[in-house]
Image (tube, rainbow, N blue to C red; front, side, top):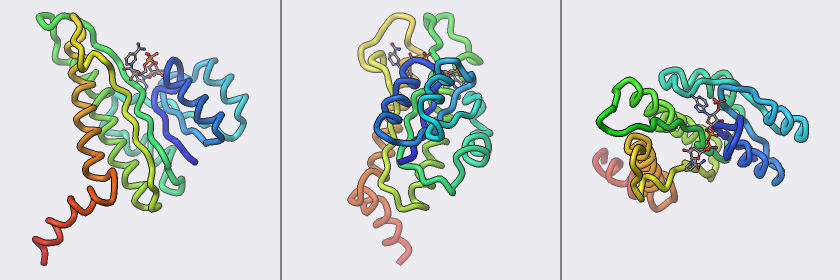
Length: 185
Ligand SMILES: NC(=O)c1ccc[n+]([C@@H]2O[C@H](COP(=O)([O-])OP(=O)(O)OC[C@H]3O[C@@H](n4cnc5c(N)ncnc54)[C@H](OP(=O)(O)O)[C@@H]3O)[C@@H](O)[C@H]2O)c1
């Protein structure tokens, strides 16, 4: 099966890639840097792990960068792991709009756009796939200095839950489409 994993260059994302590869899957990884750790994993799983350097802060060009130039519709996607994220840590009284917008592009806007195209790929191929968004405990617990970061994870969680209602199972699809069809009849 084919998985798209963002933030594959290090940390949690790299380990997610490793686990998927160990289970025999093919992984399409995205990050900005092509790290030595990633290259080592690539050498262990020849022809099963692919990489493209993309700045996910560029939400406007995510369709071209990820889906036209890398994971096009000929590749049937079975899963998307939205792991890439950045943290804008500061106290709220120091909040700067440009830094907040940059973080929201990586943590929220781009994952929402990628979800759109992953769903379209799954619909095209009639795939019952999985979409996983990596959140943070800070969205629930509350920490000093993490209000901006936590808010982006809270937005992501809400998006994830509502996407699941919309597309997560046939009963949700019926709930969504039935009123639309009803109005058209
Ligand atoms: N580590 C923790 O304690 C912790 C706790 C709670 C939640 N999380 C969540 O778990 C996930 C992974 O965390 P981590 O600790 O493994 O993070 P990390 O070590 O900072 O790695 C972040 C990954 O995201 C990629 N990334 C960041 N900005 C990017 C951009 N603009 N474009 C493309 N790729 C970008 C980085 O690659 P490049 O820099 O090469 O682009 C890297 O591969 C994140 O969603 C994080 O919020 C982590």
